[in-house]
Each structure stands twice: as C-alpha cells, then as structure tokens.
Image 1 (cartoon, rainbow, N blue to C red):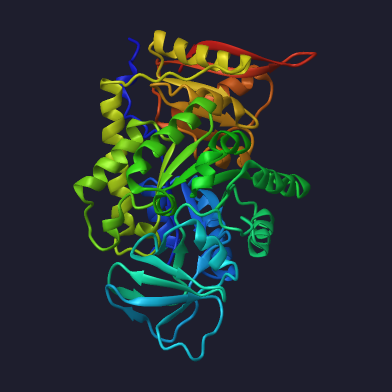
Image 2 (image 1 turned 120 degrees about the horizontal axis):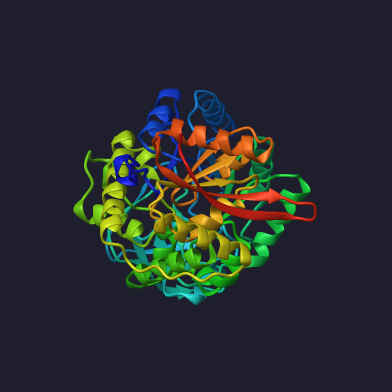
Length: 476
C-alpha cells in the first residue's frame, strides 16, 4: 500500500540565520545551534577581530565534517556614522542641549558628542532628528553652525557610551557604501570560501555590481545578500533585487530611517517582490529581542516571527539573541517551534500565492510543482550542479519538501537559504545511476519513506544543450 506524505514528519521550510558571538561561538555552542535548527551562521564584521572570525570558520569546518550542514555568511560593517570614544558614558537628561561635532572643542562648556564623519553637518540638513542606536536616544536638531557643529536637544534621558551608532532619518548620507575595511573583509571571506556576503548600507544596484566584479575577478562563487536599511534602498528596491542573490530586510536601521508605521507594509512588499523574482529574502532584526535577557519570547515577538512565515519569507534571523544573549539555544528552539507551527497552519489553510513565470525554466519548475501536488508526491527531487533549478522550484513554494541533490559541496551551502529546500551531496555519474543515488539519499534523509512516490526534475545532457526532464518515481 502506497504511503501518503502525511506519514512523514514534516521538514521545516523557513530557514534560520543565527548571528555568532560571545554567547555561542564555541564548538559546543555552534553545534547546539545547528542541531536546534540553524541553517546559516552569520558572522557580524562590525564586531570582533580577524582571529575571532577565523576561529568561528574553523569550528564550522569541523562541524561540517560531523555531517552538519551550516552555511557561512559574512556581514560587512559598511560606512557608518558613530560617536567617538569616551572614557566614561555621557549622562544625558531629557531636554538637555548637546553639541554634535566631528572636531575637538576644547573650550565648549556644553556636553560634546564627537562623531567620526566630517560631512555630518551637511547631511544633517536633510533631517530634523538625530537617532542613536536605532532610536534608543532621539535628539531634535536646534541649530546647524557654519563651523560644522550641530546643536540638538534630547527627547529622553540616557547614557551614551563609545562608538554608538548614529542615524539621520531620511538623509542621503554622502559616504561610500563600501569602505576599505569592507573590501579587506570581503577578500578574507573569499580566501576562507564563505558562502554569502551580506552587504550593509547599499543604496543602489551599481554598488552591487562592483562587488560582483570583485568576486568574479577572484573566482569566488559566494552569493550576494543585500541589506535593505535606508530610504534610498527602498526607493531603488526593484533594481537592487534584480542585481542581488538575496535580500535581507534589516528592520533595525530601516525602521530608524523611515517612519516606523511604514515598516510592516514595506517589509511585506519587499518579501512579495523577492518571492516573485525568485530571490531568497531574510526578515531580520528584533525578532525575539526579549530573549537576550529572558528565556521566553513575548507574544508580540511570536506573532512577528509567525507573520514572516505566513508571507513565506525564505528565512528569519536572530541577532543579539544568539550573539550575546543569555539564552541562545532557547532562542533558536523558540523560533523553530514558531516557524513549524505556522507552516503546519499554512498546509491546512493555505493563503493564495501568485507569482509570475518569467522564463521557460521557471515554467518547467512550476509544472513539476503542479505534478507533485496532483500526484500527492511525498517530495520533489531536484538534481542540480549550480543550485539554479532548486531555487526555481523553491520560488513556487511547493507544499512538499524539495530535496536538492548536487555533486558540489559549494552548491550544498549556497542552497541553505532557499525556502523548503533540503540540499544533499551525492556522486553524479550516468543519469540512471545518479537517479538511484538520489533516491537512496532521499530515503536516508528521513524525509520520504519506502513506497512513496516522488517527482524528479533534472537536466539531461543532449548533444546540443541540457534539457530538463520531469518524471515520477517510487521510492524502493
């Protein structure tokens, strides 16, 4: 008797990105995160030293040899405006007037907040507020002087330590998106064969093309994830998606640069645009923020993660929760539970999902997804060298798992962000032997069982060009 897909425990479709840091960057810590559901390990280049990053990569390489599939993402720092170094935090009272300046002001009696950007007084003219650390402190601009100093009044009390992040909401900052430090970090990532580069403060597609050319010049297959963090990036979203391998909705900086009430609709629009383009999209920042200090998420955070899954984002991300929080493992476990429960709900009460078919290849991918649905197949098995076919199938969000079978370890990790895709490495030989290897690997994965039917999608090499083949098989 043929088994139905319901007899197999479902695979989580939405991927999880975890930021590594002091709370998690040990052999046992990273192992626990991976076993709990982490698919991609994010290394935030805004923090730590070169030796810290190399140690994390070394640990991940060891865990890969244990059979854990963990992709590596380098997240660049980007050009930021930050406050200067202070020996002790500056205490600011509500309503207090302070001076922001890139210059030393020896005789100034009012509190001076130094900034690391000489063009600060020019760019600040395009806004009426100064935000520190995504709005933890807000200053209203009172006066801009010709000598480059900016007088501002605090809306709230607080303390300002060293190197606090400054946002000028809506202003077009006259800084390059990529600094020399970023290029050096990208070169290190190429040397270490990282899988993804997540680029900060990109505002237009042309900046991505420079990185693409750099990767090609150095023969790197790493994929480019663009972080959407500014008003300018939102305005150029169509061209940025077209030039990217993936998108991250970085809601911390984005929510500071735009009115916060606009953020939910912008997030949903970006996710929908990426879905239609077949470009993986990550929803990031403040997803389970309270779990930095507490062992359980707030109900609002649960709903936030569930909403990302309801819109079928490819991935959700944990930042401080796993980097420096008290409960990194519990945070991943909580996110995994929320995603699985939401996906189960979507299986029973599916929401309409209309995406365009843009190429002949996508038409065949959609046909394979439809065939899997019509035949109650347990899974879609996609044979792919580059990962492109698996990503094309993922775009149509099949109800069954997509098992991507490749002969390339590089491709294995490049598929760790794609919705509903379980990548596996098998040897490729003649077509029929490769199919049998794929069927055995699918059975061994536990996603499918004996006597279940599956849909196979592969490229068959002919004399002139590869031709895609779609067929059904039964797991022996």
